Structures are given as C-alpha cells and as structure tokens.
Image (cartoon, rainbow, N blue to C red):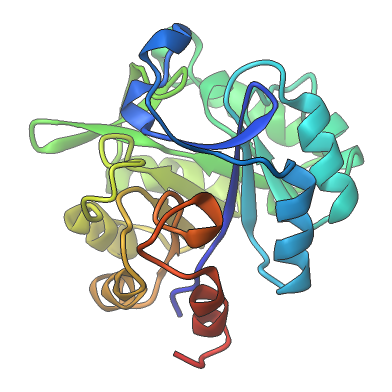
Length: 257
C-alpha cells in the first residue's frame, strides 16, 4: 500500500526545499522554496516520534555532514542517507547510524553506468543489499526518462525503463526516484512515470516530485496499484507549504484518512 515517506534535504548545512531543476554548483542560480530555522535533527525527531520509517536524508553538496550526523543521532537506524556516497564511505555512514545508504553519482563515472562500481558498493556493505537504495532520479528527454547525476544536472547513459530496473534490482533493497523536472514546483506529479514504476519494480520504490495536495497520495496509490510510495516536500506545512498538512500525512499512513 502506498505510504507517505518524509524527507530531509540538506544544502549548506540547512534544511531546505529547492526547485530541483535549478540545483548546480553556482548558488546564484538555485531557486529555494523554503529554508528552515530548525536543524535537521528536529525533523529526524519528528519523524521518529510519528514512526515514519523510510525517510530519506539527502546531502545536496558539501557542508552537510555535521547536520546529517546530528539527525542520525536523533534516530539511529531510522533514516536513509544519500549524497556523496561512495565505496570508500558507505560503511562509515552505516556505522554513523544510517538505516540504509542511497547511491547515485558514484555508479556513473563519466556519466556512464558501471556495474563494477555497484558491486564494489555492495561488497563494502558485506553483501547486505538490504542496506542499499539506488537513486534513479531522472529528467525527461522526449518520451524517455534519463537518470541524472551531479545534483540532477548531468544526464547519464541510463534510460529509466524495465531493462534498467531488471539489471539493478538484484543489488539493492529499494529505489528512490526524484522527477527532477517536477521537484519543488508543486505542479503535479509525473503520472506516467509513477504508473511505470509501479509496473516495472518488484521491490519498494519511492517517488518524489511535484506533489501538492494530500489527494496525491490517493492518486499515486491508484495509478501504481499501491506499489509506489510518495514523498511530499515543498507543499508540506512543516516546510512552509500550504498544500498539505504533515498531520494528515501521518494519519494517511495509519489508515485514518
């Protein structure tokens, strides 16, 4: 059954909601919807208190490690951590308290998928694929979804389709998919992508991008057959939004909505 999955997006050490398509190394081009006055640890505690398992914490660039560590200290073994994850540090983040690690860019040296690198990551985790999430965040080019890396600015050689899912599923426990062209815009989800993810994936998958109302949870449930979870970010009241109440999302997960 489709669940609400919360997030903590860190940029320059602060919890922010950013329009995904504007992320780059040039901070002057980044469009920010919200900057929280509260630390990442506050949101980790909030999610823990409401038993919102499967939350992802993404470090968008450098300067976020301390804030991420503080969040993990609030909820050990309760958060999935991504952003800058490599074979060299993957086990370090598990030791710091991450439930799972999320990997993207490391799998695409020179924007080309490397199965060897995926195997290296899994080997560093002692073969425990339950600890690994693959981020297949993507941008749409024509009628195809192309996996994007480097803050979603660089398209890779991997098309997100059934073939790619079949290659990757044996090595991980779930997928995270941001529709980067929809992220932070609150203009609606990519329904075609959500439907395809529900058909392609036999392991858990979370979609993020464009959610604007509580009804989007029902929409995702219906078009994915309940097989895709949904992250709501900028529309949430806890992130300055006015489209969705956090308490209503908690109630949804409890079957009360």
